[in-house]
Length: 376
Image 1 (cartoon, rainbow, N blue to C red):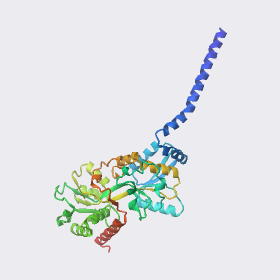
Image 2 (image 1 turned 90 degrees about the vertical axis):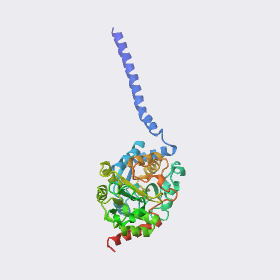
Image 3 (image 1 turned 120 degrees about the horizontal axis):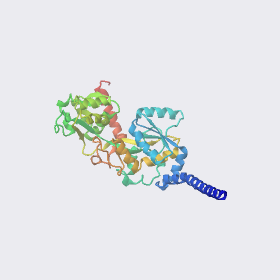
Image 4 (image 1 turned 135 degrees about the vertical axis):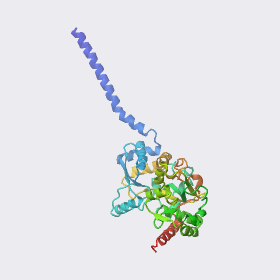
C-alpha cells in the first residue's frame, strides 16, 4: 500500500514539474512572440526606426488646441506602442511666441509642429524615408508641389500636406432668396450694404485671406468696390460671427469659422446656406508639417513624419478632423459641406497664400482694412 502511494505521489510530482516547465517556457516566449507580432505588419524602413524610436519612448508635438487632434494622434500610439505622444495644444500665434522664446534661450523641447508653419526648423526632406510618401501620383499636383511654392519664403523646408481652398463667401438663403446672388459681382449691388459681415480684415485672419483670394482672381479694384459698396460690419469673435450669420442679422459673411457655423446648422438655426465660390480655386490656406530645430526625439520624429504623410494617417486626418482637404490623392475627401472639393481646385496651379505674390496682396488688403476702420 505504501509503495503504491509513493508511486502515485511520485507520478503526480513528475506531472507537476512537467506542467510547470511547460508553463514557464510558454510565458517566457510570449514577450518575444508579442514583439514579433507588433512589427509583422511594418514595412522594412519602419522596423529599425521603430526600435530606435521606442528607446526614446515619446514625441512632443505642438498643434491646434482641439480634442480631435488628440484623437488623431492616438492612432500613432496604437500603431507604434511604446511611443507616447505628448500633445501641446495652442493657437498658432501663441505657439510661435513660445517656440521663439524657448529656441532663443537654447531650449529645444518640442519635436514637431502640426498644421502651423514654424520659424526655426529642420529640413523635413531629411526625415522622409518612406518611398510611398515620395511618389508623385499620391499627391495632388505631385509630391514636390508640397513645398516648391514655399521656396524663397521663411517656411522653405517644411511640407504642405493639407489645404483650405479660397475664396468662399457664404449667404444665408433663409433670408436672401436662393438665386438672387449667383456670382461675386452681384455683391456690388448697394442693396446689400447693410447685410455683409466680415472677420476684421485689418489683421491676419479669415476675412483677409478671402479678400486676398478675390483680389488675386478679380483684381484689387473689385475688392475696393466691394468694400465701398457693401460697407461690411467688422468683427473678430468667431462664435459671434457665426451666430449673427446663422440668425440672419447679417446674411452675407466674408470669412467665417465653419466649425462654429456647423453648431448652428446642426441645431437648425440656419437651414439653407449658399456657398459662393470660383469655378476653380487657385489660392489656398496651407497646413504644414514642420520638424522643429534640434528635435529631442529625432527617431520618433522621423517615424512620425513618415506615418503622418502616409495614406493611412492622411485618411484618418480627413475623416477625424473633417475640415481641411489632404493633398494625398488616396486619402479621400472631406465630407464637410464647407470644404471646397478637389473638383473645384486647380491642383496643378494653385499656390499657398504664403507665396510671394499673395503675400503682397494680403498686405494690401490689410492696409485697406486699416483705412476702412479709420486707423490711417
